[in-house]
Amino acid sequence: MQLFSIFAVYFIVWWITLFAILPIGLRTQAEDDHVVPGTVESAPTRFQAKKVLLLTTLVSAVLYGLWYLCSVYLGFSIDALPRFIPKFD
Image (cartoon, rainbow, N blue to C red; front, top):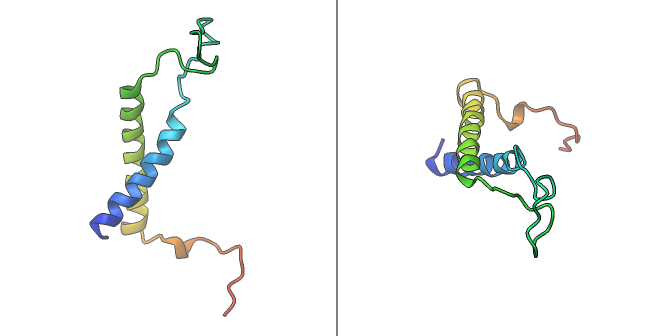
């Protein structure tokens, strides 16, 4: 596998994982009864960027490792998935 492909797939996995990790442990200003004037109630009270980025990197590394294991060593690919749309030749 080419180096650029490795980075491209990892970046996509990391980005999707980021949006899955963001709401975990989030406390809004409305939940803490401390809404700062000029902000929406759904804004986070304490955003922990380092924690979110570290957790995202760790989870995406594990997911990418599983994908790499399945695709390179076990031979699974897009062609191994079942086709739901008939192929016309």
